[in-house]
Image 1 (cartoon, helix red, strand yellow):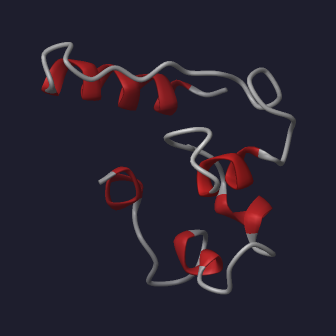
Image 2: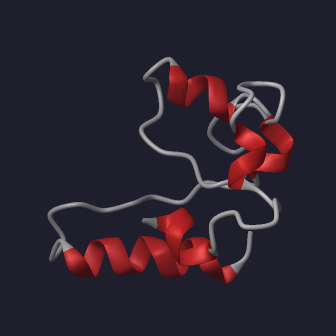
Image 3: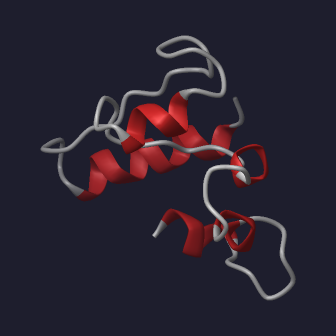
Amino acid sequence: MGTGAQRLADQITATFEGRLTVKLCAEGEFVPAFKSFDEVREGKVQMLHAAPSYRTNKHPSIPFFGAVPGGLDPQEHNA
């Protein structure tokens, strides 16, 4: 897991002055690998931070959140 996810989690905690925190779990640590999208969709997990390229079969719009020319930049992804 890179430093970007931890930086986002730290920014969320700081912005909300500790009232909202994000616990990072590596893929497969909390839910089975490649099942995390389904866990969020079913309401079992509250948030997912992952490469959209691994979930393109879940919804036709997902490729637009990845490496598509004119797509979102990293800050827009995190917004």
